[in-house]
Length: 519
Ligand code: GLA
Image (cartoon, rainbow, N blue to C red; front, top):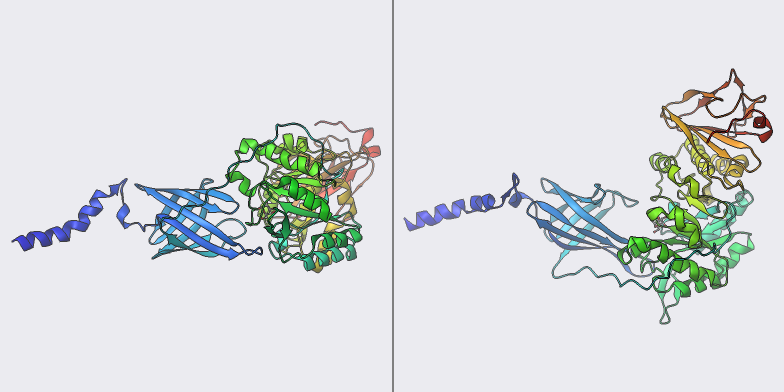
């Protein structure tokens, strides 16, 4: 009898356990347990350090939460969904950031966002492990207005390593890019900066001096080479202890680094928020940037200050007061029409902040990186020029097609970008996927661009009354196709290719007698 009671109890025990964990209609006991701290030794950086990603996953009843710590900062885990053994981790933006499955003491994960999308990773369970705390914040200067630390009378034009090369950039490749810039005519078309983005950094010596890692054996010699070709050299750092790729940042070494950069002959610094977000409050961002602005100002060299904090905290209002000549207005661009068009067409709120010497930066170009059609590349180039945006190429210039080169060197489009009035263009109106944009130019000319965001070619009838002009006497030149655009009856019939653009320039003499400006 006793044995029978015991075996009934043992038989029913799992059901009791299930029942006791019944919560909100779900048997939690049936969900895979992914709680704990997991460490992923992702890869080794060029400075010899390991790039770690930590996952701290907790559960309270059926709510899963926690954080993912990268060298560049953190994502909050706000939710997990389970299906069979698989799970999806969501972050604070509501996006799935990882999908995965537990295998014993390992989580097998795949990234769902960012440049590492699709990359598989393994994180191992660790016991009694605490994610390292970030350092304490350092004192920050009282806010004031300092002048630009470098000169950018027109939006800077040049090239940067990140979009195409990411961490596969080194001294030899930079020299080849420099040679290609000269050979291709890009330098003579106005592209002057050659910018080394993240992953050049080595470690600091006993005195705190930073040096480059083994990919860049002699920065000064490289700068001399760049200068000898009539070009300028840009470099990259962060106000945090780590850059976004997990390399050494300038935290606590702002003055020292700006002097080092000056001694190497650096002409531009891109300063990327990254891990500063783990240390400083976001309301201190302006002071954090001012700290480096002041350091650059006393470095003994004119160094253009390129702010990169993804458009946070209304940077358009203060970027120029911390010494900045350009500031990013949003997230990282990706090599796709979706990314280019979403970023490019959503810049309206920044328009008022651009002006000679200080520019809104919707991010570097993806032209020539293989994902865009010719029409999309023309749209990218035109839109950035209407926006008075920096034209920083992001492709492999050593292997550039004649078609891409012709897009990048269209002098009439570049002239719109570089126009010295420095007034950013804006959307006049949008109409069924057609967007009509206008930019006023210094000699009184006006550039008009008619974009077609639809997936099909469109015939669009542009009304002069609607864009504030009376019917012109002359025809206009299509700046991409170099054909004439004729008008009659107060309208112009345009064929605008799918994802393409027709852009033309109205001469001051042409519009002066007839234009009715309405802005
Ligand atoms: C951030 C920036 C990018 C690039 C990378 C380098 O994501 O926004 O432009 O500089 O860091 O790690």
